[in-house]
Image 1 (cartoon, rainbow, N blue to C red):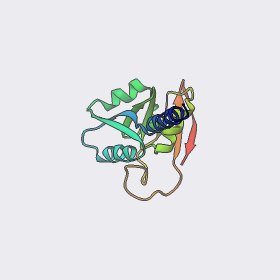
Image 2: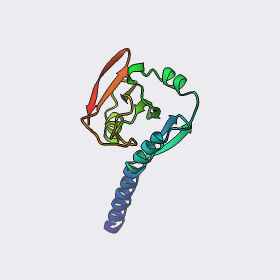
Image 3: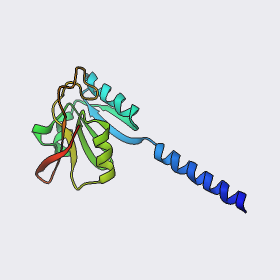
Length: 143
């Protein structure tokens, strides 16, 4: 009986570890010619995500339908866990979004900041990631 219980606990522990290690699936919509988006997808894959990349010529419509404020637009749009992630957002704020589940439409790192994941260059200062939804914009994280 003790052997069975120990084996059951071991299997349960292995199952939990495997579940924790499972990548988080997301879909990235990007311009077919944009290579920095591909770089961001590769970065996300190295940080626990499974990224389905969808090249599209209709990115502006996708951004509009997702409710992304124009001043927060980046070069690609990600759908993950019922949220929108706009631009070159680092992995930590995305994981925070999915863990905390705030009542927002999504988060965004506006523009294409140098040194952000997928972009070349050197980071010159902190990145401000904004949350948006219901006509409101607020600071979600500073990286």
